[in-house]
Image (cartoon, rainbow, N blue to C red; front, side, top):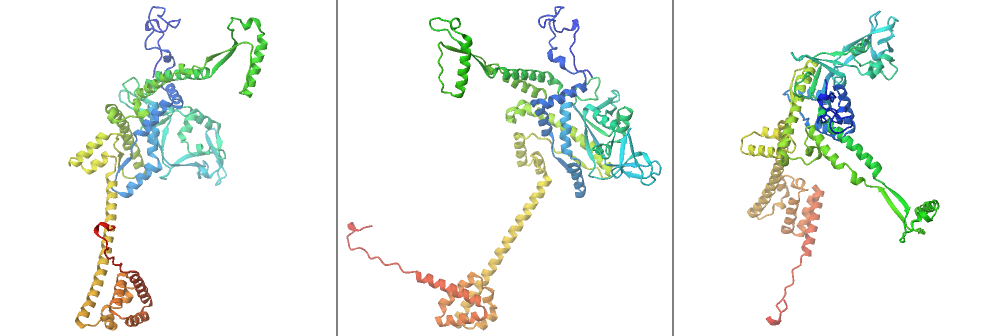
Length: 615
């Protein structure tokens, strides 16, 4: 495919021989042919080399590519009802093959080269087979050499020594399946434009081909290549032809463009900004020259004419003056306070040091914006400050571009990745897709969704999806929080019921004792055996209950003489010493508090009259 090249015939314009004005035929230079056109590659493969170089050295181009590739990818949604099946697919896509990382790598190629090629590498075990007895050996369990594109070794079963046949045996090891990104520089699509049929050929890189030609053995560091490289690649290098991939073994992501002669390749996003990037680096080179030559000033010293018009050059030895000035400068560097004296004035002249006046930073800033815009990115999105409130239309267009890219990733997932895994491991194909893409700053859309939910127009599930949340995951979390709250409330209610029951029991016992006193005129504490029979051993039950203990102390102080208190305490101490000590301690504290309380003195009114009272 021809990408560029300036015409040089007389009828098509061009440059004059002297570099300006009209050409030899009186025509002015063609406006579309400039200096940068001489550097535009003429083939797509050459453009790939430019893309790699510019991506490596240009900060704007690489930043645009990385930001777009990282921003457009979204999380996966697993619409699977069977939990074991969901676990299998999550493990396979997110851990085993690292699908999200592979998506970003594929987008890096798509946004820079305009093409990205993805294929599966299924787990295989390479076997070396003895042609004499048919004994099979795993390649990592036998000493072998590789030369002349053949594996050679010794069979331990029949003592045969020579060429061993290589064969790849498929395995079902789920941890060994891989998703591979092929370098677009080595993939050559062959497209038939009428039917739209396409097949893909792969050119083995020269570095890999040279390793296979040189040969190696298992003791070298090349065993990872010899034990894993497909056998058809070895055969292709040996015979000098391209590797043909089956039509369904590669998924091709390409940057769509207008129709042209060869539609098998995607358009290169780098091409529209090639001239701008060329001009950017031209100005950058000029800025480098200014920085090197004009940043530091050059200082010149020379004799100056005196006020009377006498020229020192005519009357003094300039060689001696030159030596004197050199020594003076050296002394001043050693001693900044050194004072030099000359017989005539000295003038100073500074050259350069004018880098600020010659810099090209403003032009470079404009070219940065031109590069970003040429690649379809608003400058505000790249350098910051992009919001829907300030550039809603611009960002809406960018959002649609991102959605188109995400659509290609959805197609690759649903039509290539999931079916390949399902067929290889004999599992059911499930519904797995990406979340809808939403710009992070789409505040107006989010506010509208919340307003529609409040009016009952949209469902809670739809609102969760629009705000970027998984409805099922949030529902599970909400149920867990509700169950936890109900458990806490239940425990609180049980604790309150137990406390209320204990209070009721205390009140019933106190009421019973009051009724006994009113009916018989005798304190039921004087009949400990009867009280024990009716209420049980309350001393043991409520030893640690502060309410019961307080009530017992009050009853002791109010209804018993000191002798009765002593007798009953002795009785309690015989059955429950700990309870008796608690009662004694509480009684002592109560007595001390009562002793500390003293009535306030009565203050009599003063004898002075109202006018002399002191208030």
